[in-house]
Image (cartoon, rainbow, N blue to C red; front, side):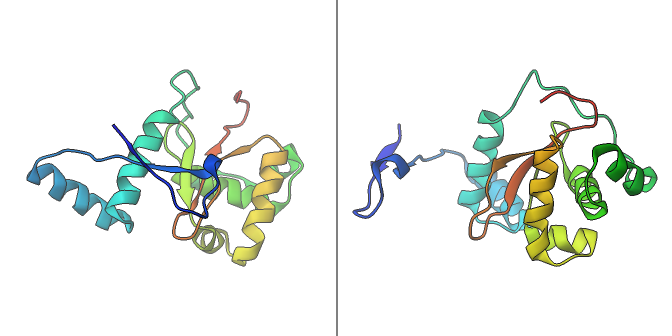
Length: 157
């Protein structure tokens, strides 16, 4: 079971719980290697794993295979009444999304993907959210990129 750890300056609603995961040495080595490959701490890797399980939407429609090379950003932007850069951001997010449309990525990497400054990616993401093409699953924090769910064209949330 989880042990409750509460700091003096943390609000009760923001209280954190800590859990231990038991595994053998071989599994521990595999987890550590996967975390290193992902460029995050082991704790963040395990946390992300459990979040993906708990946040899974089993009845959500799977996204169709996406071909970024044939993506027409101009047509997409006109169809959805969003800026061209917002269309490029949707494409970049869609490229990195899993079959459920979930993607975690830093703003700086998204900015590199679409060739803009990283300060603009938040505004562009909001445009996509307002258009019903993107959902925020989890806001980014220091050292952890934001997690979004890309909504496929014509699919339901």
